[in-house]
Length: 542
Image (cartoon, rainbow, N blue to C red; front, side, top):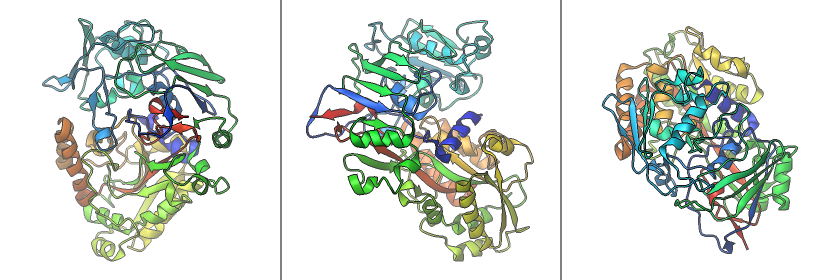
């Protein structure tokens, strides 16, 4: 499950700059001298697609976000309120059947595409169908292939899955083969953006098409340029100030992107994490931090080392799992990235800012606690040997060696084994694969505590995303109970479960959360970070 997502996260961690998550509109801050209108200029080294069924990069999602309306979204407020799921086109949170497999959305009226057509339930039904259309190979199929009848669409036998029903234009019913307790949050992804019911499904992706958000794609020339204009029929509540966006898609490198922003030839672009902290560029010295142009904000990814609970060393051995959490030097792992601005140490599974998160201070973040670690490890180290899998690149090998050196101090001999990235996750899925620890960089496609807790630690995902192979009857029940809750109760239950898992079960070693960097030109105002820039909300200064 979601192996493509994990490869996406791995690529981002290794420096491609694709990890930023675009998940919510947000309220712009007041900006002195800001004015409505103007064209926002973007420079990119490329764009995979502008088609919501196919795009799977941070820059693609950022641009599509300006054109998108969703069934559910996140409010225009800073976290944690800004990370609470709310209705957008849906009139209210959806109802769910007693067996938990059928979701029913009632839509509100008033949303219209840029060609004037109303947004009805059929627009969302078509979005789902396009992810399953023959030959399209949409990344969104990860989330729609379990809908009843999805295989018939893939095979070309029908245009719409039997599990998707549209009634009276404003009622959408989606029926799954299995429980999907986080489906409302999944609908915040671009794959589920409303599209015209007649929009074709093209394996190469569509270009210009009507949008129902504040903007729409007016012109798209792959590899060259993109033009996005204001949707004059938009009557929703999202902040939108500029007249539109123009993007140059043919920039030679990320360094050139940053050069153009600094010279004022572009207002924003995407670069790799390391590019922002190049000592020669001196962004902090020139612009300060989190003032008007250069921003570094806590991200939504978690980097950790899974502890394989199916192997003799860590099986039924929570004391040793807690001991290694005490023994690792999280600060050293952060500084191995070259700057403390690159990441923030963490000892929990949920990211800061998520509703329900409570900073419990379970394990040391500034350095190891070897006294407590040795006391807990005494008599529990068993063979005293461990195998640690990681990517075979210098950066991740260096962090793995830090962990190896840390754990040697509590009596564990850790052998680090580097594996090529293309084969890495497949190896973790092989039953009986002889690893005791495994590097994991996780950034889910949508924001919900289920994606950080259940997806990584529920026993039903062993052999897929649960590389810790943690399969506890007690915690499985707690995770599934939390998943069935809604609203504040759901966030509260997950916040408590996060602390309980980390403090007592310790199925992995959370190390740090990657920060997200943003550079804008001096004429940009209304800078809203989520954690990188919300393009829809930007404005231009006088």
